[in-house]
Length: 204
Image 1 (cartoon, rainbow, N blue to C red):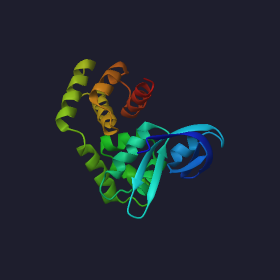
Image 2: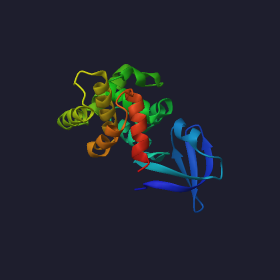
Image 3: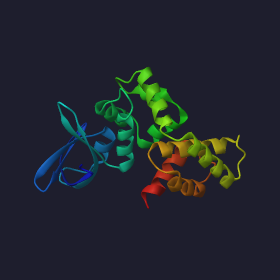
């Protein structure tokens, strides 16, 4: 399995980045969000990768961050969502927007991507939310509310709960994100909580 690639950027197009590693150019299909953040041709880059092997093809997908790679893996685990559709979705929304859409049950956010219909969008939300243990999540939310000294019905507690669920959707464990959320301003909205938490976790 190819976990990552590090080398010189040889080519970048709308949904493709070629990384030269010791004279071998690896073509990685990727999202517009990754391509737009890559440097100029010849600069050193590192992409986190996922190798997809099928009967008729072998394709390498690469992303600038582990969070975006996690989103990709989550999406292709949903029945009816292939790598091409996953890349298209991640070209239309960033990691924070993806996590928030799933956590808040906003299936319409996914229908903005060409080729993703209402049924597929609903399946994305339902299947990804089901990947989180309801028992584990409930316990974590309760713990967070106590840490923030919030009543269970408060708007702030709801934002913390949604942010926690979104981060768990992205593959983080409650032991990783609960301490981070406790340090953030509980008055922040859900999207800002997710954004700040991801920054904190990534900087470790």
